[in-house]
Amino acid sequence: MKHVLKIFSLLVAISGLWIGLLQASIIPRSHTWLLPIYFIVSLGCYGLLMVGVGLMRFPTCPQEALLLQQDIAEAKYFLKQRGVDVDSE
Amino acid sequence: MEQKKEKNKYSVIVPTYNERLNIALIVYLIFKHLREVDFEIIVVDDGSPDGTQEVVKQLQKLYGEDRILLRPRPKKLGLGTAYVHGLKHASGNFVVIMDADLSHHPKYLPSFIKKQLETDASIVTGTRYVKGGGVHGWNLMRKLTSRGANVLAQTLLWPGVSDLTGSFRLYRKSVLEDVISSCVSKGYVFQMEMIVRASRKGYHIEEVPITFVDRVFGSSKLGGSEIVEYLKGLAYLLVTT
Image (cartoon, rainbow over all chains, first blue to last red; front, top):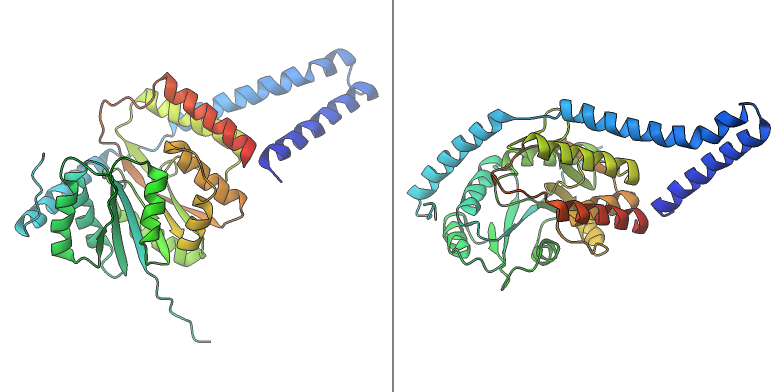
């Protein structure tokens, strides 16, 4: 099944649930009408939270830049000795 | 029961454009880290004016023309077609794709291979966003857009991998041939399309952490048009995969 159809069916299921709640009056009507807004806002907040948390925990590796410089020096030395042109352009 | 020892050969495809120095460094590092492995390096150079191909020929003299294949093209023709071109000349049963600018370090190649052998996966993709991985050289803005883009893509596409735009990957050759034939995007959306299509087709995908050192300092790859391209790419993938 195409992915977009999966999302569509999910939305249809949620809408069905919402309409069911509207008709069944378990929750007061005024609240039920606002449920989609609550849903979208919560989704937005969740997304922002995920971005924020991810940003805070963003893995960095400053030592890798150093290691890379060492590797570059090692490679240049090896290759230069064996006739490979490694001078910077 | 006797365990059949598979003879695996890995074809490392490296597309290049003006990577005269980096290609030599990367070849050295690949040979350094894959000592016990049967592999070949396929350099797909798009007519670099800086003499990249001359350096590759020197490397061929040093390491052997059977280990380093130079398969150039006349001009810049795009990454996707570079992979297809490289694939045509690949004699391995596994293919690794990686960037030539040393943002991908060959020292991770053994971990890709090990992961594939352990899990029998069809694709092993490098991820920068998990513990053990990481990025160096990105400012806060860059990290923010990367993280935002990733959350959006995860929410919309449910791709099953943590790093969608990464291009350091190991593929079973037959799987790469299958996936690449159905991809039409360009640039980094192409990398996303590859992994999403592979995921949709049900291929077994595993991830290994990698570190990414961005050496292209100061080049702002994220203007407004880049963001628009990304959103268009996401919409395209949402609807067609």
